[in-house]
Image (cartoon, rainbow, N blue to C red; front, side):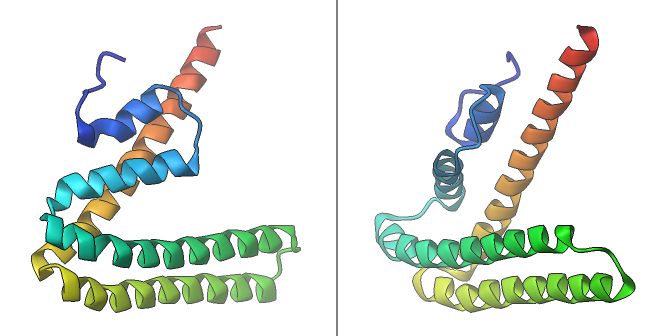
Length: 150
């Protein structure tokens, strides 16, 4: 764990390296800390930004939950050309809905923070997700390597 940097924006690394459970509240807190650091909002901007962010985040979360539920249903179905095509249509529909949410909230965010910070927000959201995915993969690989040594 000596590669773990102790800085506010490295929290995902500390969380994953520390073997913490995938607690959605912890992950959300880490994401908010990362976004806060990246956006460097003034107190006035923060007061306006976070309520919009909370609404945005809730909509995205609900869409992802719906997508996961549908994926479970699709997994249980026998694969045919028709069900495969239906599953593809459903997946594209989710991608379209996500794009619609982001487009709508881009306009909402621009009402409360400058366009540059809106761009920074969407970038930092992607970066955070990428960091979390990389850390989870590393953790999984490290577990596999420990098993191989045993």
